Length: 595
Ligand SMILES: Nc1nc2c(ncn2[C@@H]2O[C@H](COP(=O)(O)OP(=O)(O)OP(=O)(O)O)[C@@H](O)[C@H]2O)c(=O)[nH]1
Image (cartoon, rainbow, N blue to C red; front, side):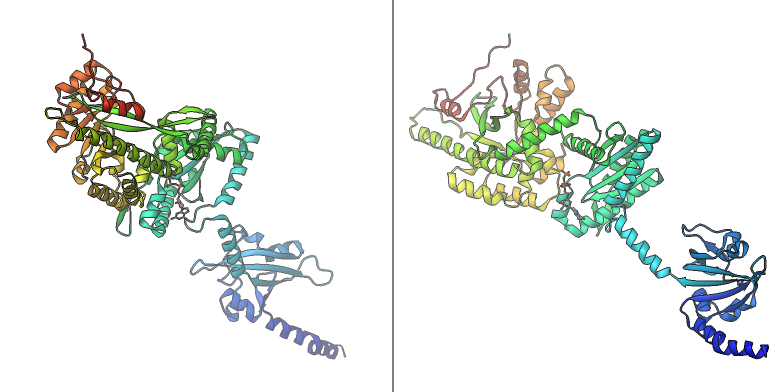
C-alpha cells in the first residue's frame, strides 16, 4: 500500500517536476556531500560547455576547476558556494561567480544559488541543489556601459567624470591623512592649426597617438585623463616628480609621429597645481592648474609652470585687458605712431615704421608688448590688424601725395627725395588668415597708395611654418609689389633656407644686439655678420634700437643701410612726420658729435 502511494506521488508530482527542471533555462545540478554529481539538467551542460555524461561521470568534473569571485579573484575551494552550503547547512543565494574555462581560460559569469538538502533529523546535509544562470552577456554589457561612462571614446583614456572622482578620492586622502599630490594640466599648442590645415580626422589620430605616448610615460605613477579637446590631465601621487614628468610629456609630444605618411609633431604647455597647497577641492585645483598652463603658453609655449597665487592677479588683469580690448576698436582707443627709419649714408628719413598704441580710459596706456600677444591669442589681431592696415595705407597715401606735389614743384638742381617707405607689422595670425590678400587689395584700391611704398614686417618664427595659406599670402603680397621685411632678426632661428625661399627685401637686426654694442664683442660680431649676410643676399639691413653715438658709428663702420632708434628719432605722430617731409632739409637728422 505504501509502495503504491510512493509510486503515485512519483507519477503525479515528481515526474512532472523533473520534466519542468529539464526544461528550465537555468542550469540545475544535484551534488552529493562527497562531491559526486548525481543529476544535471540539459541547461547545466550547455552553460558549462560540456555534456551531461561528463558532468555525471566524475567526482569533480574537469570543467569546474577554477572559480572567480565578483571582483575577478580566484576563490579557494572551501569558499565555493556549494561547499559553503554543505558546510553551514544554509542556503547561498545569488552569488556571482566566474567559471574559468580550463582549455582557453575564457570566463563565463554565473549567478549561483545553492540549496542544501538534509534528511529529517540529520545533523548535516547529504547533498546540495545548485542552480545557476549565465549572465556573461549581461555582465559584459554592464562592463561596457561602465567603461563608456568613464572613458573618453576617442582615446580610451579616463574621461572628465571618472577623473574628477579619482581627484575627489585623492583629495579626501590628503586632507584626512596628509601628504600631497600634483595635478598636471596639459594643453597642446596650436592644435587648431593642425585641424584647420590637415583636417579633423588627422587631428583625431594625433590625439590618439599622443594619448598612447602619455600613457606610457605616466604608467602606474598616476592617472591620465582626456579632459576634452586637446587637453589632458594627470593626477600624480608623488608630487616631487611632477616637474620631471611634465618635461618628459612635453618632449614626447614634440617627437614626430607618422600619420598618413606625414610626420607631425606638436608642442604642449603644462600647468601644475599641488594639493593641498593650491586647493582642497577639484574645481579650485583645476582652475589653478589651468592658470599655470596659461602662463606657460604666455611664456612661449612648450613650457611647464607651477601655479603661484600671483598668477591669479595676472590672469585678472589679462581678463580685464581682454574685455577692454574687445571694445577698443569701436571706441576709437587705438592709434598709430610712426618711427622714422634713417638712411645711414644720407641721414635722410627714408621710411617709417607704424607702431600701434592703445590708450584705454579704464586702464591707461597699455604697452604693445602686453596687448598684441593678447590680441593674437584671442584672434582680435585680425580686426585690429585690418583697421591698422587701412589707417596706415591711408596715411601712406597722404605722404605719397605730399611727395608727388614736391616732385612736381622741383626746380633744376633740386635734390629729389626718396619715396617714403611705410612699414607695418603683420602678425602670424593675419598671415595665416586666408582672406588677407583680398583685404590688402581692397585697402590698396580704397586708398590709392602704391604698393612699393609699403613694407610688411614679419617675424622669423612665422616663416618657419609650413602652411600653404602663408605661402599663398606671401606670394600674392609680393605679386602686388609690397615689400617684406623680417623683424627682430637674429633672435630666432636665423635659418638661411627661408631667406632664400621667401622673397624678402629687408632684414631688421634685433635691438637686443644693438643695445649690447659696444660692450659685447659677440653681439657686435652677430650684428656685423647680419649686415654682411644682407649685403651678400642683396637685402636692405636696418638696425633697430639705436640709442648711442657709439652704436651709430659702429653701424656706419660695418656698412649697415639704415637705423631706427631714439638717437635719431622717437616715434612721432603722422602730423609730425608730414612736417618733417615738408621741411627744407627733408627731415634729414643731425647726429651730435660723440666727443
Ligand atoms: N581633431 C579634433 N579636434 C578637436 C577635438 N576637440 C576639440 N578639438 C579642436 O581642438 C582645438 C583646440 O584649440 P585651442 O586649445 O583652443 O587652441 P590651440 O590652437 O591649441 O592654441 P593654444 O592652446 O593657444 O596653443 C580647437 O580647434 C577644437 O576645435 C577632437 O575631438 N578632435
